[in-house]
Image 1 (cartoon, rainbow, N blue to C red):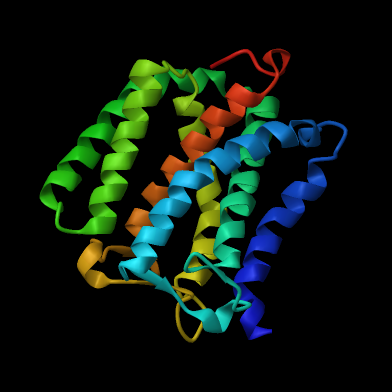
Image 2: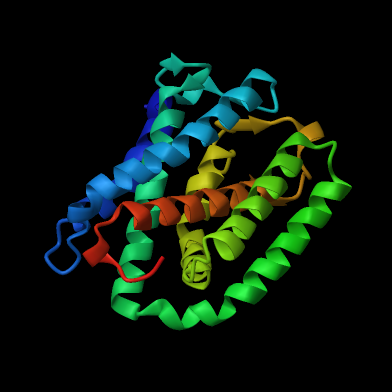
Length: 233
């Protein structure tokens, strides 16, 4: 059973969301094509990032917890991660926005973007020698600037709120991946390349990395939805 730990994490993460996607009140299944297009496009640069970091031992995987199937240096479970995690995240955003009407959170767009970009730039300048920290900070700042100032997305407040809710699932999932309740971590990090600030066993960079991935998935998901399916950019 031990060798299927990472695969089980992927499947458990996606299972409930997938089942409830067919609920008559939710009907997220109608948006599967839009989601798949978005998640695959977002996965391409993130997997390239993953492959490069793994190749340079910035992080690496403990194959004792995987099936042993490797593609471009990454366990197959890591490839699935870029579909399973975004599905649960986009599904959660879709449901909360649909039933709770989160549009009022757009009022916080400016302050969220301003504070986040300033913090990311300062951290990148102070820790340019730490690859994971630096790349994560730059990518996050660039993503927020693009979404807010170029695309003029009005949903950043909603997405940020939903991501904070998603932290309830992030901690157990990423916790196990980084070693919580296991003899050793599934994902290991080179201490030279990140801040060594952890939330339990989770590097703080992981949360920022996840936030950026989430924003990009929401952005492309909205683009690929049919025009009648949504009213905002």
